[in-house]
Image (cartoon, rainbow, N blue to C red; front, top):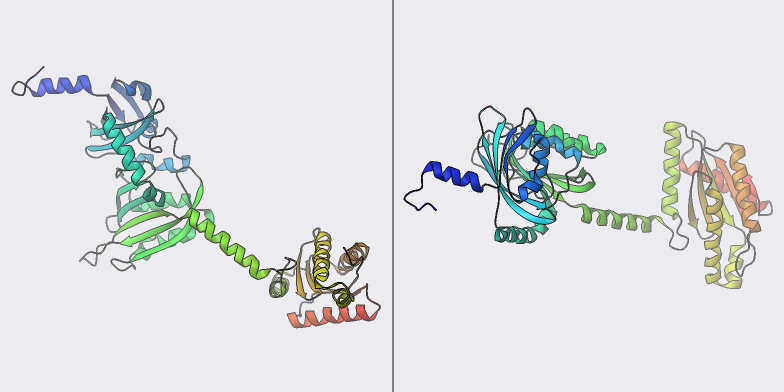
Length: 430
């Protein structure tokens, strides 16, 4: 045992060599490493030799306290995170043999560029406990902000990179902003990549005033390779130099709130578009469908037809049996029509009262008449609770190129009138 006065550089170095957890020599350019020494947990964690890329993934490019690997798409950044130009030290959180371990890693460039001496030491159990408690305290923040980074447009550099799911500490990186931007765009959902490139373009970002923020929502792959909703935030640093174009970039996880919001909007959209009794399209929505079909016909020549169905003598149903039975009859009527239309490309809605409208696509005149007749026959054969049987009169017409909504509707409405005048329970195609 050396005392304070007799310690020399040589015996201190010998002591460190005998107590270090692991020491590795690595060559990034040749993609290899070999262990000079492995002790304790590092005998289980590390092989005597292997590839540098695998070493990086095993030590620090994985989920915290886990051996679960990050998705293949994000591993494209490994060369930039594993290239060192000076000394570097950080803590890494590992899971070895099913138990969590905190390891201090020190990287020392050694000789030729890309060659590193890597020293690993396990910290004591209290450090592991402190780190675990800290992890729990910041879990809410980590779940919200997945990634942060600073970048400088003038120098075209990045720094202060933090991946919350990988480490609590700032990560080392050697990547230009230009290269990062062209790599990360591949993690954005295809249809939103153009938006990302526009809003992350240096020319666009230079227009942001000092201290101001620009942000937008998109779907982006997380480290597990799943697309989630995120908010991308670009904040220009507020300095006294007007030519200082340094930014803070953050990725905020808004997936749960966005999914809930979109579900709520979809729900209210459905409520605003549906008839509350029959749950088919209401008057406003079916009218919109008709107008959209007319526009589609004019742009693309898509064949479009329209039906109006009117239940015969429906007032007598309400007067004789009451409105509750009338409502039940309307509900069953729509179910019969929907069943027939299930084989067609169609939109179906309640026009009002006992009148219904149908938009049909891709049918010629003969096919249109056949569908209308099938509807009429199915309704006539159907047994309706309490009421017994009902019939309907149907007017139909094909859309002409010069038609507007009013001219088409007028022609179909007149066809319904002729069907009723002809004794009801029949089809009239105009």
